[in-house]
Image (cartoon, rainbow, N blue to C red; front, side, top):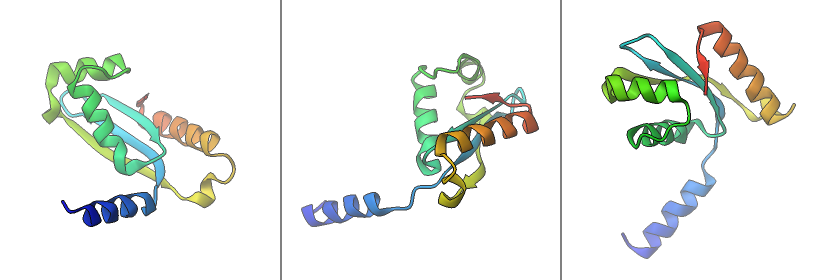
Length: 111
């Protein structure tokens, strides 16, 4: 990759719009669900899958299910995207409230 191309790619990455929200990880083999909040929905799946593949996810029940059933038994889904206007009332408070809503609605364990 040329230096100019690299600089352009880095600049484009920094300028991209980041969308916060709530996501769901679902084990198809057991029906178990885990919901979480993320400041950037575009990158959270890769982060979760990375920690699971390396056996280091902090949610023990999710890691145990992954170890038992393997990557193919899991799906990732965005449940809710929150725009900047929705987050004006306090980013962490809003994300926490929406996560609690989805955990209750789906019977999911929080991440």
